[in-house]
Length: 66
Image (cartoon, rainbow, N blue to C red; front, side):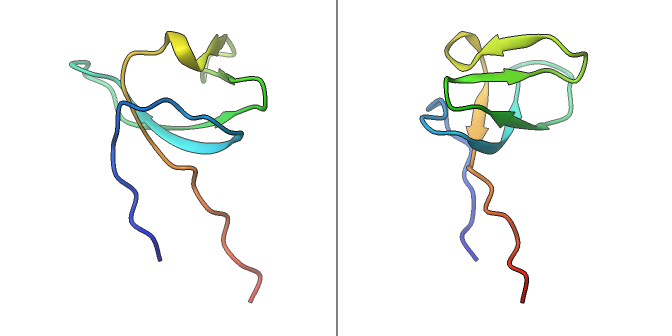
């Protein structure tokens, strides 16, 4: 199993990622980044990955069916 590391590098490909804001009193979120670099906040608003401030970890690898 590969360990994920928090980094300021923004996701460059589609997939599920952990995200945490910087200096905010907020729990980390798991977000899906689409092929054009957008994701949806829990409140339904969409945002471009390049506009976020925070750290990312991923992409998260789906579990196997074994």
